[in-house]
Length: 114
Image 1 (tube, rainbow, N blue to C red):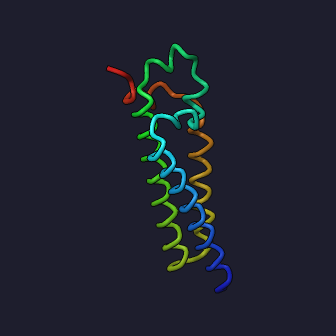
Image 2 (image 1 turned 135 degrees about the horizontal axis):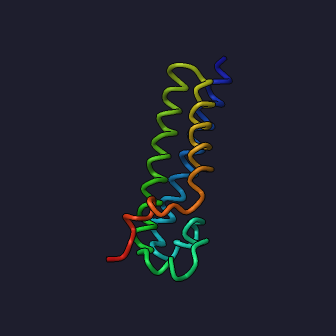
């Protein structure tokens, strides 16, 4: 059982490291990395001009940090309670990841230029 706990905590911490690394890239590059956001990149140029790239990048970065905290919580709970919780944490993240890949007007409303 110890080996399973180590693997579960390792998976959560690797996801945390990857998400934090992406958040650091978004922080360092700023508006230049707006092209990494697929839902923004897929918009036509006319619609892209309606939104502030800096705000879009900051929102994406904040989302990455929140998901990193989610996986830190997953690592702690997998260690304390049961290592099989890692399946729940990965499942919730995957469901949110695949549902959030398309452009939603409501989601980007707060990033409009004034």
